[in-house]
Image (tube, rainbow, N blue to C red; front, top):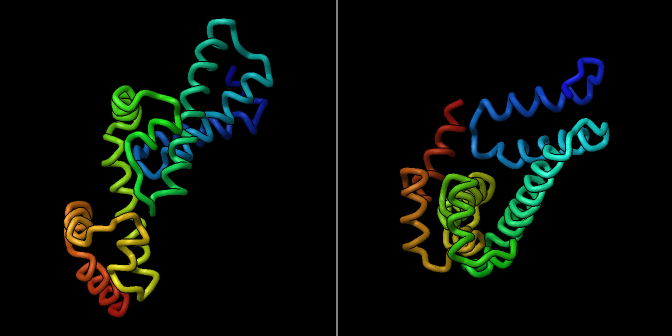
Length: 173
């Protein structure tokens, strides 16, 4: 189905494989979006067999579930999110949801959530002069010592050191 004369289609396929080669976590949603575009083109061009249609349909259901889940995390990371909340967004049993998430994403739901929250906190530390306690609260951490522990784990320094070193680094340029 990969036809050279269909330049838009081949662009999406090439872009997908370029993104997949990087294996960067932040490109996961972009890769899924491109894959949906490719699958949509395949259906549009009617370039599939019944078996391929069944496989594509299953994969589209998976992509829809993960997109709904990631949208939920991106929209609610600043709130208290429970396992029940996350599993309910994709209509899965919480126990099965953890296995599903780990198998598909490569890490537990809470590891992903904490990484996302800490990355958002790091961004806020660089963009604003808001107090660290406010940033912790705005990224879903009600317990300051837990926030600092998580920040140290993912960024290998405290939030205040991160802000200080980043600002010092900017001034040296």
